[in-house]
Image (cartoon, rainbow, N blue to C red; front, side):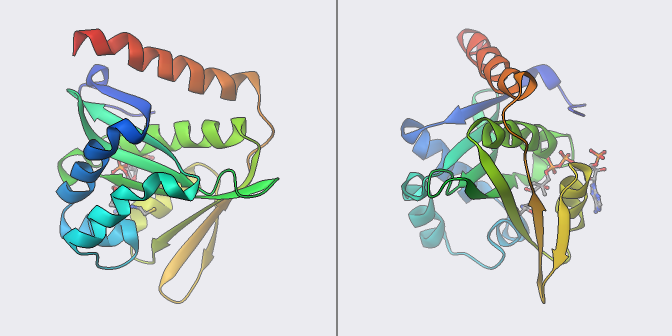
Length: 183
Ligand SMILES: CC(C)(COP(=O)(O)OP(=O)(O)OC[C@H]1O[C@@H](n2cnc3c(N)ncnc32)[C@H](O)[C@@H]1OP(=O)(O)O)[C@@H](O)C(=O)NCCC(=O)NCCS
């Protein structure tokens, strides 16, 4: 993990319905390019609002990376409880000023552990063809890439839960809670 800008300030933790306003505000702060990359197309403010309001209706687990108590990055793992063994879709967003300092990588590791701990056997990620940073992140974590016409699908197959995957989630969450009183 390469959190080279104030690593002690970046906390990765699970977000819940009580955090819906922070999730909405994060999506609304995304610049046009990042928004388009996250949703694989243009989305209006109204569309973002609706998406944030419904984010927990899709069997989604959401994890946020916060700096000084403000959510700057999110990973959504969608469809976790739909089927068994399950296939889930992961989607990432990091605000422009916070990109390329390791937040996406940190979210990726937590997302992978959370999927593994819940018996997800296939993780799919879609990104636009020109999104070389996301493609790099996916291949760095051993995803297989499949080219579509305009998009790239990245696929990962987690193993069953391991002590390491449990520790990644439990220790990571505990670290976040331990930091909260000092924020
Ligand atoms: C894609 C995204 C999630 C990555 O998160 P991030 O916090 O910026 O990424 P990180 O800093 O953790 O990692 C970036 C990695 O890509 C590399 N990278 C940076 N720019 C790159 C580029 N143009 N091409 C290839 N690799 C690049 C970095 O060197 C780093 O690699 P390393 O960890 O091996 O050193 C983030 O940039 C983002 O939200 N973009 C807009 C929305 C989006 O594209 N979402 C993906 C749809 S699922």
